[in-house]
Length: 506
Ligand code: 3SK
Image (cartoon, rainbow, N blue to C red; front, side):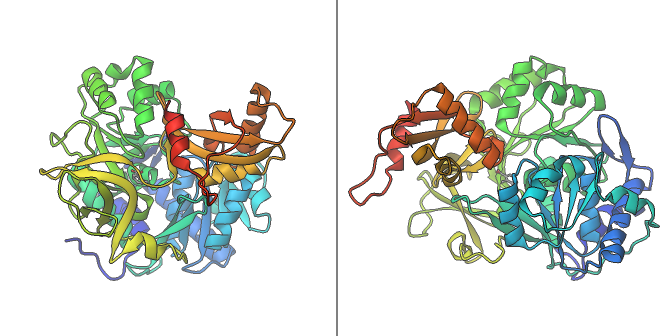
């Protein structure tokens, strides 16, 4: 049972209290070119809170959009916003203007703190949103404003169940939802999955690839290390070789990444040269048993496979220590409960497939969204995954039961890609499904009916792919396109998506 005081500011606990406990000079953030101590980060976060409240007149509850790759200023911005009692709206750096606009309209942000290199799409999407940039580049600069501040700021006296974070999730329809997380939720994830499964030591160095805009990254690279006085190695967009080199150079001990990246690390041929690694966490998509076995063979490490969700902030079912059955996702993390349900919402017997439902200290609340009633019932989050639980309590992944495509750890809503394709003048109809792929697990595959007279050749494929990459985040583009005369439909005109899925498998 987790107990937190009624008044709680998670940034104060994770940062200010860390400085009190471990001292100003303790290392907290490492990048290929920089090292920040807890004291430095606290000063920068406090200065940001001063800029927000003193210069920009923000008050507790105002929402601030954060946009940028994983680096110390993004972490300082996250802490500064929350220290000020404002709500951090974390976003994926790859989002394009229209996607940012949709999120802004949903979350009604008052200000954006954005890496200068990423302002163009933000500006194109929400030109009216006040913006402070940081890092190298032009525009009104957050760092310069911070330099004029004392760095003394007492964290806002928020309640434990005030919202600290709005974390967007793309949903199955492409219409994003924003999940609301309280100050206590942020700590609860560290006090469940991290405490009981990772059991971090104080001298740990966490690292990984997920953006901080994805709660898998935010937990693994910020919340968990800070909760245990450890350090985080931040890499902006590492390829496998860079990741491997950085782990070796900085002695990283805990790795968070998706199955695709574990495969890519194996492909570098250097997996066995990572002696500092102690724990490896995999989530975001299903980890094939062969990848687990090969990684174990080459490194001696047992990847901790887990499933989490933006809705519950982080991992709620996972393997732990030697309690690992390769190919299974593991057992419920202490503090959470999970059941497998049939179509009527009743638990199915062990060994039978059904829909996974989860309940825990982090809860699931969508901001102003009627889908709350569909996906959250009696406090249980009804996930989009089909699972089987065995008699020993291990959960075995079967499939997605919706239209979400998980490709290389990215959640991609098929209907959103369809919409992007349909905006092209040459496209008459489009349907998108996931197709199996050796490297990415699944790829986005589109079936497209073209306007009469347009050839379905390679040039058209490339044109459509480029078009989608410019319309929505580039990782969502269809890596394969098949041109068809018509899409399979029922007599009522309903798309028979399952036929396309079968076709994509062949
Ligand atoms: O996809 C997952 O498994 C996941 C894990 C941790 C945090 C968030 C998510 C979506």
